[in-house]
Amino acid sequence: RTSIAILVTESKSMAVRAYLGSTGLEDTDRHGFVDMVSAIRSPGSTLKPFLYAMAMDDGLIHSESLLQDIPRQTEQYQPGNFSQGFSGPVSASDALHRSLNLPAVQLLEAYGPKRFVAQLRNGGMTLQFPDFAQPNLSLILGGVGTSLESLVQSYSVFARTGKMAQLRFTRETPLQEKLIISAGAAWITRLILTGEWQPGTATEWNRHWPLAYKTGTSYGFRDAWAVGVNDRYLIGIWIGRPDGTPVAGQFGAGVAVPLLQMVDSLLQAQNLAQTTAALPMPKPNSVSTATICWPSGQILPLTDTNCRQAHKAWILDKAVPPTLRSSEQTMNEMQQVSVWLNKGGGRVRPECSYTTQKTIDLWPAILEPWLPAQEWRENRLPPVSPDCPVTETQLQSQLLISGVKEGGCNSQSRS
Image (cartoon, rainbow, N blue to C red; front, side):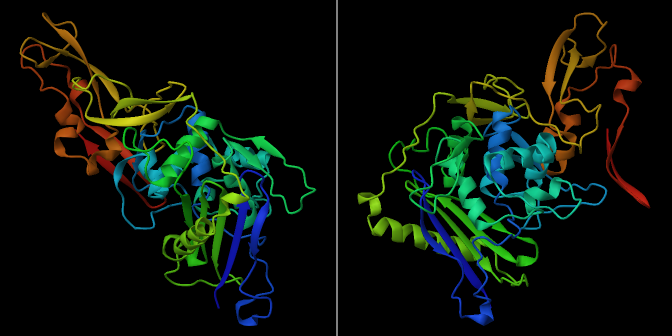
């Protein structure tokens, strides 16, 4: 009883060229009379690219910022990944490409759910919540309602240098658009969605871009999505049951992406370039590259002992934001500490003789279960010297509360 909806739009003119609302009006088993292009459904993960682009514009991240793919739980919300596993430290680009849920929740928490919704609605995107409900962290994983029509329209920002344009169903309809994200953020995000984003290895396409797309799967396998952007078209695919019943094992990458690729190949094979001009999107001047280091997320000499992992990143306006904190970290947890060392390299008190000061970048303690032992905090700090040792208060264990709920708590001890 599965139905299909397909929408194809020219990205340059925003003229709708293909509109398939169902498998057939007379197919009652599949509720063919329901137009699934305009129906309001849960979008799954298809809103994530907008969040990453807006976070870049806001100076929260660059393409290789260190994010946290770790278990997290708020009072009533405990999100997980589709794979049921966790990766620990991940880059922003890898998190978006793999559609990891926990880094997106961390990013939305920093950006603000209400602000995110307001920005999308300002461009003309339809987002519906239950009566009296407010935008919250679940919206980035599908906790909101929208339509295939609205999604395809909104993805125009990744083809039109950050401008969201309205669909045109008639020749008389004027082209209307509004700037939502910067051209640089749109370019970087689209590059990530192609799967080839590494500086130095990715082709900077000025004339021909490969298909960039994002998938989505709603809760309970009720909706499978794929929205794509190629040189000339915006393509939207929805697969599911119009009555909202689940289809076990039906997810975006498994069923919607193959159909998206078929439609893309069909458009290329028909050589519609004779009537439809490509929309070039060269790299904006605001975009450049830099080699940054984890865990700080900053530019450091590769010989610096604080450069634990080097990553080539796309950056906007030469801004390199530091590693984003999360609510899972304690307020007094320092990610950069200053220590004083004697001539032998032992850690001593600042007032001791013949000392030198050294700054050490530390990984967020919450990531330690996914790090090799040599990267743990206690192993990154130099050993304490028996001569003029640091005080006991500087050595005492830290109690880190990683989760609290009624009836008990979870904690981790750090020496």
